[in-house]
Length: 222
Image 1 (tube, one colour):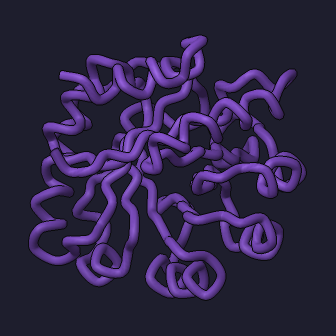
Image 2: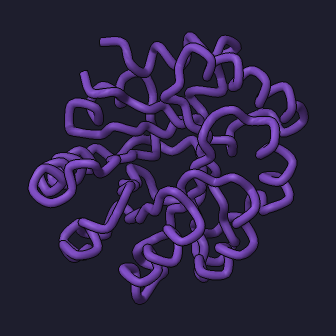
Image 3: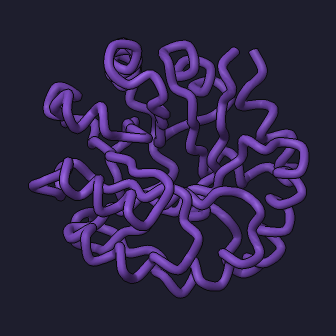
């Protein structure tokens, strides 16, 4: 099996004990280096919800040993480059639907961060992304729920989009990370991995487990 990265979504963590959560994830990361922390950043405009901003990332970025993966569900993603440049983000993902010139913006992201990603909503066709943009990406995030809220059910038709992305990856961008976010649990994880996903975002399912090692392993076991 290709190395699979598990990216727990901070949105589902216990914010009353955030330091404790980061410590538990650091301990898990010691034996599982392919662990990222997914940061859902929403502006209340692009999606009908408002989450944390740079202050939360500032409070955790010095203590975490894993990669920080930020998903900006915002109307003006360019505004966030400057705000987050000092917080050790590994990956900066913006929504294709929110940016008029994605190819140029990807270059701006890579001037600051190691990795640039694009996310697409369930009803956005993968063909909307040109080959030029697709080739320039480090990460493609396929939303398997409507963005904006945690705890939704997996949209089964997302599997076809993952397969399509994987075929395109083999042709023009073999190093692309295909990430999937939405309704990922110990059942759907196997389906998206089989379809070609290499990075799984899991929120509600992951953090409901007292033992994060158990949650991590259950997402990978057949």
